[in-house]
Structure formats: C-alpha cells, structure tokens
Image 1 (cartoon, rainbow, N blue to C red):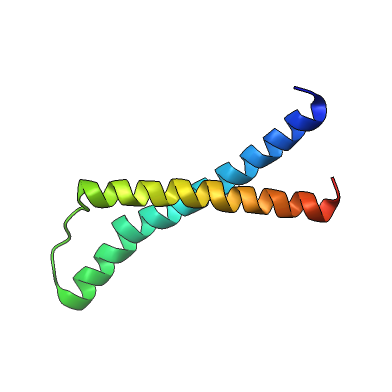
Image 2: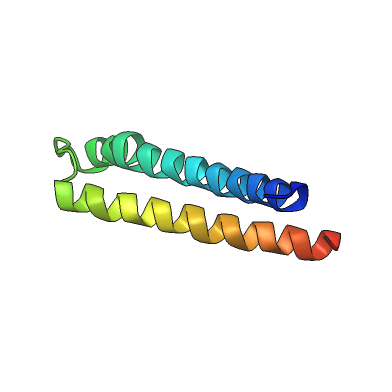
Length: 83
C-alpha cells in the first residue's frame, strides 16, 4: 500500500470511527438514560431494558450510520480539498 492510499484509508477510518462513536453514544444515552427518565417522570412506568431484537436493530443502525456518514463525509472532505 503506497503512502497516498494508506493516508486515505486512515482518514476514512477516522471519519467512520468518529461517526460510529457519536452514534453509539446518542443511542446509549437515549435508550438507557433519557428514555427511562422521561418514562418515569411523565407516566410513572417502571423501566424495562430493551429486548434483544431491539438491541440488534439498534446495533445495525449504529453500524450503518457510522459507515455511511463516515464514508460520505470522507468523500466530501476529499472532494473539497482536491486530493
């Protein structure tokens, strides 16, 4: 792998990991913190952890958003910089 391809791969991985982590944090906060607090405050319903099928769907969503948005932003940044 030459230097240019290695550099582009590292930049792509940086964008994908960045959006993967951001999306994972948002999903974790919404599912485990914000959602239960609102449920408890507004409806006085005890919180139940998400089912495994919901966890699987959210995991697929996080992976898809991380790869898709990371790739699109890498490509956009590459296009704008003229590399």
